[in-house]
View (cartoon, one colour):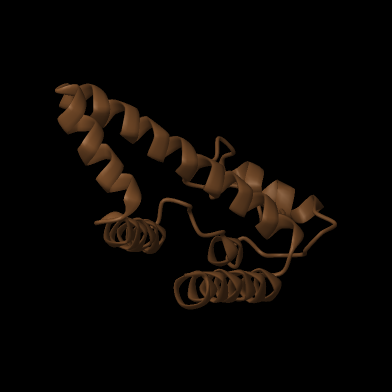
Length: 143
């Protein structure tokens, strides 16, 4: 039996077949009494769902607060007022925000698979610092 196998309760393998598999296994010599103790954690555990809910909530609040009063929201407000079609503007702006978020998630996943979290964190800090310096330069020196 391998540690990444499906638990007995979910698996189509009977308990007797599992005992035979344990006896013939070259990976580990586990007894049937120990085998149920080393079953992997099911992906639908409450702890996993709670962490997904926390990630969702944190993401929602962060993006919601970041978007309030920014140029995207002001542009959407102006387009809605000019077009007199608020639902069409809503659908268009929602589709655009979903698309840009999808691009961000896909790019983030790609980067996370290739770079260490520490490198990503340092790079993000440097980019934010550069953006801050550019804004400072534009406000105080550029006029």
